[in-house]
Amino acid sequence: MTRVSCNLGDPEYRPAAHFTLLLNGIERMMLDGKPTWRVDRTLMTSGLLDALLQSGLPGGRRLETPWLNWSYSSSWRWKEPPPPPPSRPWAEQ
Image (tube, rainbow, N blue to C red):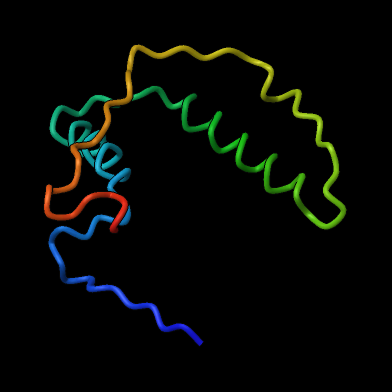
């Protein structure tokens, strides 16, 4: 048996750095009172995830999704989070 451990108290340990951008959007909304992105983006993502999970149920069947037949465009652009400190490259996390 191989034992694996991690130091959760290490300030350089960032297993979920991708949530930083989500939290920044929530903070921006709380400060200025305006939604950071449109609600239909959340509804689309929820619908996609639900269809994906339902189609993977035992037997893995194709699932038609007519309710997802709509377009979406946004002016919001993803920004890559800052890299980890030089003392801890991604490959070693």
